[in-house]
Length: 470
Image 1 (tube, helix red, strand yellow):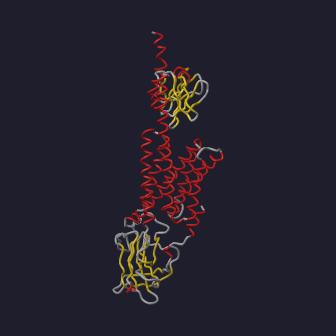
Image 2 (cartoon, rainbow, N blue to C red; image 1 turned 135 degrees about the vertical axis):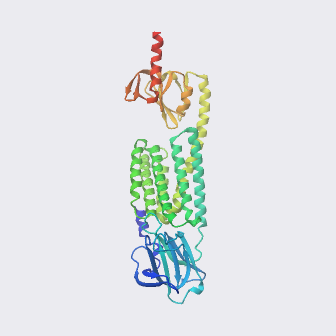
């Protein structure tokens, strides 16, 4: 909220001159103006033709100058009755107007200036903008020509975009191999932020027509909202799994409310603030509970907020992309290292398991355990791990995928749900629950049965009885 207030307070460059709105028409020797009155508020040509007039002095310093116009409008410009050029063709209706570019510079030759006051006239109209903007003209000012290069900012943004898209590919490969929910979320986060970085640089790289600009702004806001939701989902699943759905619901409401904030920059900042704020709350709770990794996550979120407050003008243009890249790239490297370690542990576990076919070798942070298959009541999927529920009430995490265990466990184990494998030796029976069912176990709570697996469960439980009767 503080960041939003700072940005609202900052003056726009469109107010750099004292502009008057006039009645006007083209004339043989230049525009014919009358009934000029000072412009109050923002310059707004949306849905109308607008004539503007200002008396300006030649800027100090040597070198050429230009009038820069940025906004959703077509325009024509005159200085002291001499036409400097046109951007599209302004008109009194949508049919008469030809849309111009969103950003344009009208160079001013030295011979066009007069000593003292110079009359600058701008004719503009905007009938093709789509959604109405609160500040349709973001720049209308005389400045040195050309403007300072943004090569460093562009290079940093492109580097961040490349890193983010590479991270998206890396997490996508990890998800394809392991089917982990966290890797899919991080792949989406990196991909969304990378796409937004490309969209953000579009204004500098491509001289697009002004009707494109509104939809570009909508796209930037939408991608930011999706990134914020994914950030909340990731931090919630890591530190507050039980509250994850509630956090996503609150974030979704916040994203919807951010649309009501005036100005697309503020909409985007509001959406990002909601996501970062909720993630910081979840990380703060995790810090109080001394969960591993919580302090580092909270510190990183705090640094991003501090940088945003210190440099608000670069928040959505650069620091956001650097923040996203700095968040997902270390996680990608950590995940790659972890996967390598897990593969090594699995190889050792499989080698040991081959010597004990009646046991399942479980590799954990505390060491390696050999669990007799007869003591396993059920195997329950838990993201990229499985949870082994034992007859004595213990629960062990095992670094393996449920799909792989389904093929390796003996025939006495049956997949009864997309996330559950049951040991039939511990089953007492089953009961229907609508179209689904529940498997009644000798130890522990009942296990869910998927609707499409209910016939297989029934056949498996009735097969011994049928054989005995025969």
